[in-house]
Structures are given as structure tokens and as C-alpha cells.
Image (cartoon, rainbow, N blue to C red; front, side, top):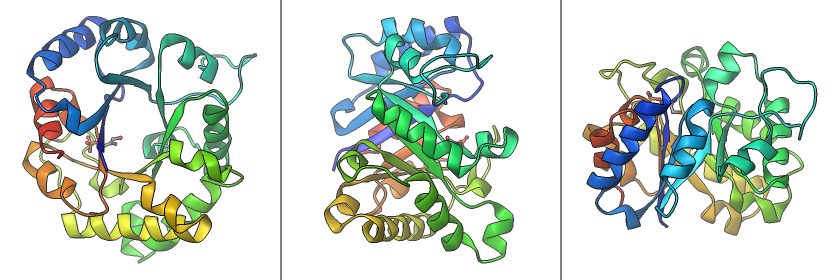
Length: 254
Ligand code: 13P
């Protein structure tokens, strides 16, 4: 299966910085055929990058959206608008949206349904936080998130969804020295997620769904994480802000 590697820039980069990243990145990226590459800049840089990425193999994604098409929702962006600007992907249910902006599984589920309706491919983020991990609740939390977020999703639509397993305790929050999950722990989580998807849908869906890892992925650990059997790619925060290190991570995906 072709790996999927996505950059989540979070609240970083001006338009000028985003363009200069892409110009450099396009020059240095090597085996881009080995991976599906996605860049998710902040909303303000989407238009500029949409132009900059035209005729390239690099896809554009957003970091969030509202579930309605239009209306009185001050400060929100709709799936129609993301399509209009050239997005193919949208990250939904990131732990930062859940923790800081109080998003819950039910809202995330509505967003996934809306994204699919408009032909956007959702990257659904799930994962336990440190407290849940320490209480031994990892599996329970992951299973509940999957059940709630994928509720009422048509079987035929599941292949358009990528699941990102992001153990919250492994997310760098901008600290380049933060520790990722070990490849064994990450693999265990991914395998469990695949099993839950099989229980919810069927074996062929669970075999084919992409499950990517997020949490302090960087050039130093990308190869070992990406070589695990159930890890189909990465959702990269901090290390995706630098064109060289993001390109290096992609070169680890074969
Ligand atoms: P880091 O790579 O900075 O840990 O961020 C991971 C993440 O949250 C990607 O969505």
C-alpha cells in the first residue's frame, strides 16, 4: 500500500513562508512516487498554496471545517469553501481541537459526513491522552472514538477516510526533543484500530483503510515507524515545518 504522509502545520506560517517552503520542498523532494503527500497549512495560506501546488503531485488539505454548507457561523469555514479553494483532504477531530476547543466525537462525526458529502477526504484523528493511558484505558478510548466518529458512515465511503492514530502524550507541542511512541507501541495501537474497523465493517475494509501515525514523527524515527506492518504513513506536526526534514521523512516511506 502506498504510504500517506501529511504535514499538519497547525497555527504556523504566513503566506510568504508557506510559499517559500513549497518552492524549496518541490526542489528537494526525491521519491515522491512512494508516498501520497499532503500539506495542510492554516486557512490563510490555502489559496496561495493551491496555486503553488498546481501540476504537482502534492495535495492540499485543511486542518478543520464546519459541517454546514453556509450560514451564520461567524469565524467558520465550510466544506464547500474548502473544495472551492482546491482542498482534497481535511483533518478532523485533532486532539488540539478536542482539548482546546471542546470538540467531541459527535461533532467530528457530523463533520466527517459533511466532508464526504462534498468529496473531501477526511483524516480522522483519534488517540488517548496521558491520563487515559496511565489508567489503562487506551483501547477503550480508541474503540469508543472510532464507534462514535464513524457512526452512520456508509460502508462504501470508508475507503475515503484515513485514520490518524495520534497518542496525545506523544505529540510534540513544538518541542523537537519530545519522544514519539515506540514503534512497538504505535504498531500495537494501529493493529487494535484495524481490528475495531473490522468488527464495525468487514475484513476487506479494515485491510485497505489507511491508518497513519502522528506524534513526534521526525527524520530520526520515521523509517522505523513507517516500516511497521500496520503503519500506513504519518501525520507530521513540528518536523513538517522545515522543508528538509519533511522531505527526509517522505524519503523513509517505501
Ligand atoms: P508533532 O509531529 O509536532 O508531534 O504533531 C503531531 C500532530 O499533532 C499532527 O497532527
